[in-house]
Structure formats: C-alpha cells, structure tokens
Picture 1 (cartoon, rainbow, N blue to C red):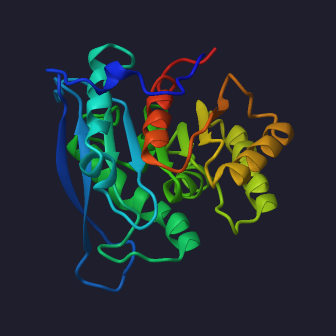
Picture 2: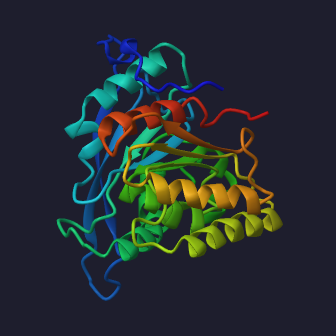
Picture 3: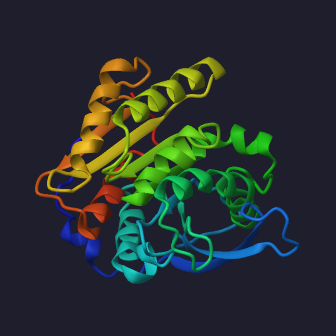
Length: 285
C-alpha cells in the first residue's frame, strides 16, 4: 500500500464524532514482590466514538518515549485524539481501543533504558493487560486468563516511539510474542549503544520459535524518519533481519517505512501511528 509522508489536513479538523480519553488506574506487584502494598499506576485509554460494551474491539497498547509519562500521546498532544477521531469517523480503519501506559515506576524516571524496556514485559503481562481487558470490551470478552489472552492475540497490537520503540521489541516482541500479533516500533530498536548483532539474533530467534509454536506474526510495521537519530541503527538491524529471517516477508507481514525528512519528533510519530492503523487488524495478502 501507499503510505502517507505528510498528515492529511482533514485528519486535523474538528469532528462531532469524538472519542473519549478515560483515566484508568491499576495496581502492579511486579516491582516489589516483598511489599504488602502494590504500586498504583495509571494509563490513559482512548475509547472510540460510540464505544459500547456490547461490541468487541481490537486494542493497541501505545507507549511514549524517554523522560515523559503516560500523558504524552493524548494529553500533551491532544491532536492525536483528533487524528484518531477522524480516522474512525471516515472509515479509514475500524474503531479500536488505544491504551497509553508508562513503563516508568511511579514518578521514577529510571535512566537504565535496558532494564525498564525489558522488565516492563512482566508488568505488561501480569498486571496491565489483565486489568485493562477485564474493564473494557475487547476480544478477550473479560476472560483475562493467560490461555484466553494467548487465544485472542491477533486482536492485540503494541507500538511505541523512541524508548517506547525499544520497549516494543523487548517487552512485547521478544518476551510476550504469544500475547501480540501486530507491532509498531516507531524510531529505533536498540538505541545508540546497543549491539546490532544481538538484536538481529533475537528478532530472528523470536520469529523462528514462534513458527515452531504455531504463533503467526500478522505484521511488524517499522517506521523511522531518514533524519531521525535512531534511523541508522534501526534500518541496519531490520535490513539484516530481512535477509536472514525467512519468516519475515516484506509487504506481507513486515514493512520498514522511511519518512523523507522525518526527524525524532511527534509530527513523525503521529504519522507513524496513522500509517500503522492502516495495517493493523486487517487481513494481509
């Protein structure tokens, strides 16, 4: 398909068909198993216009970048909500639920990127997904047992920008592949100090292991601007993976979209989300 390299102006217009951004709070015991008091965390949940518990919705877990929090996508940049409202109102894609959490622990802006991007996998599986999908109407239908979450993985996506892009690989792709079938890493894979060889090996192994287990990848939708600081490492890793991994087929279950002139900013990331939603939850030929 053809992807947009500029956000269409009509996506930024006001529309009467507005979704709701709702605060969602949950507890996690992931980070201190010895504590008698679970950590209380929050996320923002976008519910499309006309949301009803009588309908089942696909769901996207959408992460911010480093040094900010769950407010980023919807509160700090409310035009993200306007873009989603217009996409769903115009029938560009089916309405879905989008959850914007944080990998940080409370107000702690931990600088250990490797740790937080990897370890968020535990909270994601154990705490966040069960809490969200017990509350909202997804294809899990309120049954948040691990068995059912695995069975409904093709209705669940994970995407993120910058450090959230790294988290897409580490927390969702490498460690929770059985819970997600759609992925959107927007700007980077391992960061400027990461080991490209290790990442290539992990991606290939994840896909090879998944094939043996009968777990299909519906789409790995990588995006980056060609002026983005994360572009060289992301492009190098995925170019090598594409050559080495027979399970990854460009145009069928994988793409790497380069935005000409795109930099490490929200304009590019909103465009990445816009393009990704043209692909997520659709049958691929």
